[in-house]
Length: 132
Picture 1 (cartoon, rainbow, N blue to C red):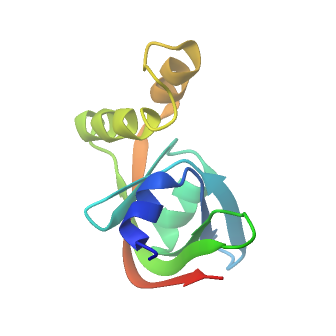
Picture 2 (cartoon, one colour):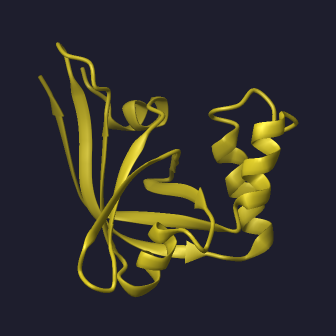
């Protein structure tokens, strides 16, 4: 049986859609962490997705496994906010990166952690899941 919680904690890529100040969509694949029914995405406050969240908190997202038969997926709509407090940003960003790297001592992990100065926190308002 399909478990949404297990699926979201196992998958590695979330597609995040935000809306810019002109009303145009911006869709990007991102690394994420799912915890306590919220999604967390590390980024730079200068990124397009972070700038968009500043002006429009409504986002949508999709996580799927991209493999046919069976194929599983979760999509939803939610409200996003930026977390900017440095100590929380580093703590959450570290936990996100540890999903993808064995150690934060690796050069790429260190670089990504240094570039991350905000976290996008998404509180889902509606979630739909599917399996075929």
